[in-house]
Length: 126
Image 1 (cartoon, one colour):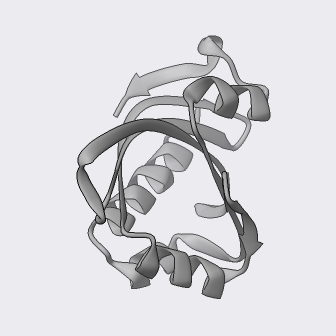
Image 2 (cartoon, rainbow, N blue to C red; image 1 turned 90 degrees about the vertical axis):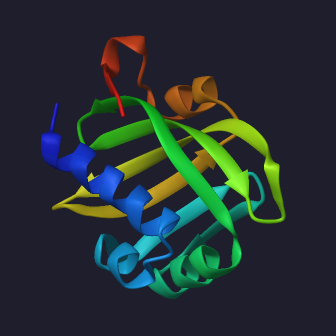
């Protein structure tokens, strides 16, 4: 387990949830891949656009990690429907304390399957 990778992912969540775009971008590589159920995009400007328009808050829960990959189960709320809380998961790739990719999944099981992680890779609750 890498404490650094987990710390990076948790700081990334904090920056996103606080709308601290500058910190979010500093924690992300210039060629970051961002994806979810509606497709994927690449680059720091795409991340900036998504972070400023998505209106999402992601509260981390269970954490899984192995070889630079961190999967986080999250409670998600969107600004346009704040009373509706969904449980989702995101997979992160972290290299040299920067997020190089983040992909949101509709459920933890699909995030674990997409990254070849399992319950054996569980490390903590955030």
